Length: 328
Image (cartoon, rainbow, N blue to C red; front, side, top):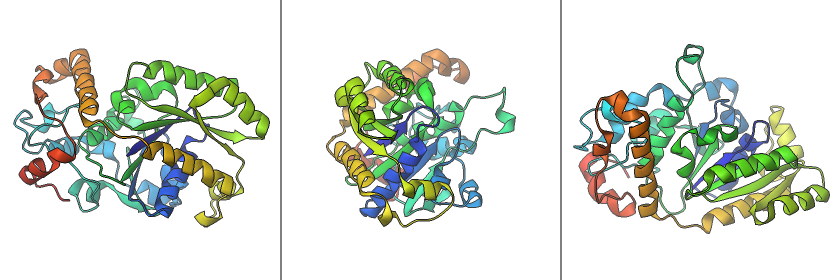
């Protein structure tokens, strides 16, 4: 299952991404955390030292290798240069399991708080005025398009802040999108903006309220959000200590926060992915990008990259994996 945490800057989405990752680890679940925010802080939130977090190899710096790796032996993709961030998998593509032994994970994933951590990488000075951050998050979109996560496996993504998350099709790659909101009119407004952008797409969007001072905040939010409010998190001495650089034992996290994390997990586990519908969204966004800029950039009609009748999912793993040499 895949979950993304979104929200305006300062809402606490990175903190919630890290707490939910730790919650899954404490339950013994396999989990991959991905830092896809322009401010790369998820590693630190998972307890890494600054030097350790900086040493996580950035996905965004090696998109060409990722594209070449994932195209496998797909005859519709003659070279990595033909691959864009939305290119869908087809017969011969390298479909991935959440396997630490797979070459892409060995190359880019590093341990953090009992999970595996990957990161898009920071926006570098040489990028200013030349490229947008979505050239980096495109690596995550391409990766998720080729990932066949199995039963009881989890991917947790800390997304870029604000409505900028909708500047690519990445927001549709998740089973559940959790918007972290403060109990303010602005926080509720961000949720409504997200809801309107997501309308018409297969996106399950829920709100996790953060930084609550008391029951009045919860009551006000329920009146504003109704059933969209999934949970509410109050003040935490554990989080404050962790943010100051301490390393408190996760077992000491306040019970009320544990309950909210369990509620989020129950919501996620209660969902079932429709691989056919998921792939139709993949193809739809690919064709949109092809018409908008991809065809012009590639000098070819990228609609030809769509493999008719192919649907990724567990049933597609065995034959494709054998052809492409995928571990797991």
